[in-house]
Image (cartoon, rainbow, N blue to C red; front, side):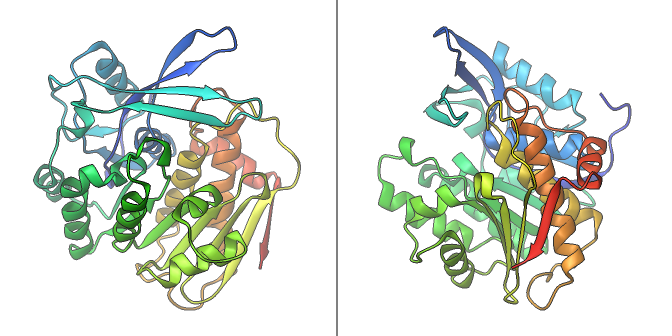
Length: 332
């Protein structure tokens, strides 16, 4: 645990839950998690002052979640626990390390908030320049919480980063879910999406890159970061440039839990470290800047998948992997 925490630069809003991960023997192991929770820890572990906006439960799991955040140096906007119980996700991992989720989300602590509470916490965070959300926060059931808050943050001049990270298996009306996700992405300056997310969104195109271009063209985002598993990741800018990064050699994958969250954290860290302007991506950009974004993001995810569960890497670990030359980069 760090002795000092840096000033707040990023605020995150979304789920914090317990992943009940099924082991080969059929028993379930409780692990702290949730996409936004993982992202929050990953940002802080790479030296970014991060504020987590949602409340946590007073139950045992909630105390465990709070301890995980504070140990990693995360600031809590709602340090006092609430009565509601902690969200649960039952996770089964297949032979390829891919997780499958079932969520228990009614009457839970991380949803016990409002647009007004999120906005007030951000107003009180001096120096805040970027906000992140996504995953289960994109449920239509929580539209009244997150949409007004995101609109307020964009109006305040903060960079809005949204991770599509779809969970269609737990949404009762898939068509309504797609419409809501696409509407929410209209508020994003930066969109992170996976090839699987693009398929769930049912976007036109014969390749992941074409679908991502369509998403970018029909949004206000200045760039899209697209992850494609072993193929690596792409960065597509509104100015028409495309970049690609991938591991030069195959990794020994333990599981992919939290990989996308660590990828996004690495991207945001590099975005802030480079001090890229708010309109970066709308015009011609330097390849070296895109290289730093993608390689930092890929390195963060690669370190994660070689560990069980979501164990976000430290900044020095990511820097070392990037410096090793393990990640290839090219202008597409």
